[in-house]
Image (tube, rainbow, N blue to C red; front, side, top):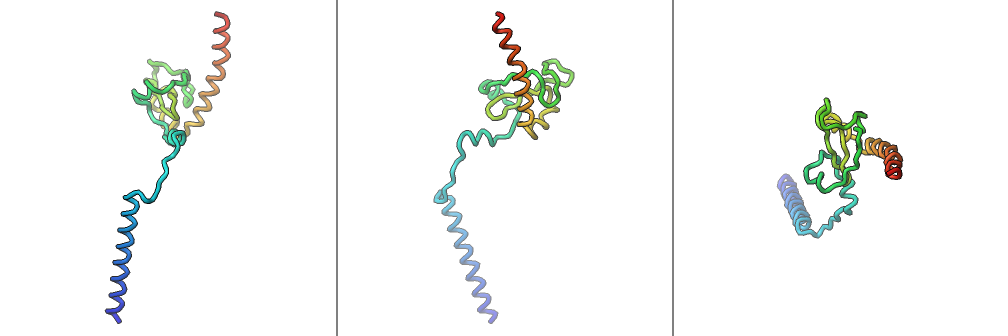
Length: 133
């Protein structure tokens, strides 16, 4: 009886090993299709990150003058340190200092809404200046 149980166990192990090898081979050969996300989805899935030099050259800067996290004006010679540019969903957003990066990364949509409010307030003033010229 013990021998029969041993043979059955060995047979099961061999069968499982064979099935596993077949599954690995089929996924390596590409017979299991995986679809790539659409380009828009790929951009949306990328988390906010500190902008690289390439990002700064290729992506549009939204032009916010105030940090959406702290509310501080963004200045090159700020007491809080140098401003930080964040790349997110194909645009550059400006923060006042490195300390604000963590909060922006945690909830970029919240801070983008604040930036959009700032830019909307500035838009009528910019339009008025253009018409008086």
